[in-house]
Image (cartoon, rainbow, N blue to C red):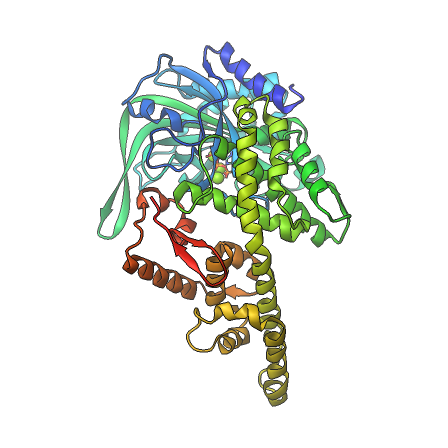
Amino acid sequence: RPQTAAETRQAFLDFFREKDHEIIPTGFPLVPQDDPTLLFINAGMNPFKDVFLGTGTRPYSRAADTQKCLRVSGKHNDLDEVGVDTYHHTFFEMLGNWSFGDYFKKEAISWAWELLVDRWGMDPSRLYATVHEGDEALGLEPDEEAAKLWETETTIPAAHILYAPSKDNFWMMGDTGPCGPCSEIHVDMRPDEERAHVAGQDLVNKDDPRVIEIWNLVFIQYNASVEEASGETVTTLAPLAAKHVDTGMGFERLTAVLQGSSSTYDTDIFAPILQAAADLSPEAGIRGYNDIDGTPEEVERQRIALRVVADHVRTLVFAITDGAQPGNTGRGYVIRRILRRAVRYGYQGLGIREPFLFKLAESVIDTMGEAFPSIVESRDFVTRVIRAEEESFLRTLGTGIDMFEAVTDYIKTIAGYDLSNPAIVEEAIPDVTENLLTNWGSSLRVLEHSFEGDYVSGILEAAKVSRFPGEVTFVLHDTYGFPSDLTAVMAREHGLEVDEARFEELMQEQKDRARAAGSFKQDNSQVDTWDAVHDTPEAVEFVGYDELSVEDAK
Ligand code: ATP
Ligand code: MG
Ligand code: MG
Ligand code: MG
C-alpha cells in the first residue's frame, strides 16, 4: 500500500501500465486546447472527447494518466463547497484509465476492485458500489449488467451494491457530448462503533464527510444533444458507434483514504501548504491547521479559511502556468474571482493584510513541482502575476470590508429594535443613524448613486426587515471588487438576506449604460457557463473610488 501521495500517483499509473495502458505523463493542460464549450478541463476524459465521439483517433486503445481538473464553472461547479467541506476542491487531480472501444464494464469493475482491495488492502466492508437505476426521461433501463458484474467479479457485500438516480449515476461532461451510466465507488471512513449503528448504505451520496465517493467508472455509450421543445430543454441520447470506458478517481481523496483519513487536507498533499498558510498568518493562535486556539466556532472558521487559501492557491499556480490569467471576462474572470476569494478569506479568517498568496505559491511549487515540472519553470512568472493581482485587490478590499461592516452593524442594530415602540422610532433610530453618518459618512457617500432617493433612508428601510440592500452589494462589487456571492455569504453569516433582485437590476442598468456608450463588445461564447460571470460588469474595472473605466474587452 503506497504511503505518500507521490507513491500513490505512481502506483496507480504502474498498475494500469501492467494492464497495457499507454501512460500520458502529467496529463494535458488545464486550459482546453480545442473545445469552445469548456473554460477549463473538468474531468480526465475531456481531452479524449473526440475519440469517444468517433471524430478522432489515438495510436492506442487504452490510456491512463493523472489529469489536472478545475471545477468552478459550467456543469461541474463545486466552488460553494470548497473550504466548507473537506473533500471538494476547485483544482484537483483526477486519476483515470480509459478504453477507447476496447474493454468495457467487466474489466473496468474488476480492475478497480483488484487495485483497491487486492493490491492496496482496502476493506470491502467499507466499500460501496452504485449503479444507474435507469431513467425514463432518457429512455434508459436500470444497469443490471453492472450490478451483476459487481456481484460476480468482486468480493463486495451484496447489500453494498446500490441503485442510484441519474443525478449521481449518469455521467455527462456538459449538457452535450459523450456520456453514459456509471458505477461509483464510495468509502465509509467512520469508526466501527458508528458503522455498527448507522449503515453505510444510508449515507452514500448524502454529503456525510466521512462517506465519500472516490472513483467513478463511466460506461460511455451515448452522445447527448439538447433541443428546445415548447420552452423546455430536452436531452436526447444517440448511441455511439463504439462503447468506451472512462474512469476518474480523485487523487486527493484516494490519498486521504490510503493515509487513514477522509479529509483531503490531512494528507501530505496539503500539509505543507496549510502550514505555510498558518505561518503567514499574524494571528498568534493559528499555529497550524490542527493547532488553533479559540472556541470551536472560531477554530472552524479559521480552518475553513486555511482550506480555502490552500485550495485556491493550487488553482492559481496551475491555471496561470497553463495559460489563464486574471482578467475581466471568461476564463480570466474565473481566475480573478478565485484569487479574490482566497484573499478575502486570508484577510477575514487569518488576519492577513498584505499580499501572501504569491508566497504560498512557492510552497505549492515546492510540494508539487516534482510531479509537475511545468510549475517549476513558471515559478517567477506565476508569483509575479499573483502578487500584482493581490496588491491591486487588497487596496480596495480593506475599504470595502470596512464599509460592509459599518452597514451590517447598523442593519443588525436597527433590526433588533422593537419598531412598535415610539421611543425607539423617535430617538434610538435617529441616534444610531447619526452615529453611522458621523463615523462613516464620507465613505458611504459612494452609495449615493445606487439608491433611488436618499441612501440613508434606503438602508434604514432594508434594516427594518433584516435585509442587506442590493444597492450595497452592487457598490461593493462595482467599486471594491467584491463578487456578489461573497457579499451574500458575508451577509448570511450575519443572519441577513441579500436583495438579489435589486442587485441584478443595477447590474443590468449598468450593462445597458455601457452598451449605450458602445465602448465594448462582450465575448459571450463561454462566459455563460458560469453564473457568476454574468455578474461581471464585463469590462468595467475599478480604478478609484469615483471613477469607472470601461475598456475594450476582446
Ligand atoms: P461528488 O459526488 O463527490 O461531487 P462527482 O460525482 O461530482 O463527485 P465525478 O464527476 O464522478 O465526481 O468525478 C470523478 C471523481 O473525481 C470523483 O469520484 C471524486 O473522487 C473526484 N472529484 C470530483 N469532484 C471533485 C472535487 N471537486 N474535488 C476533488 N475531487 C473531486
Ligand atoms: Mg460533484
Ligand atoms: Mg458523485
Ligand atoms: Mg461521480
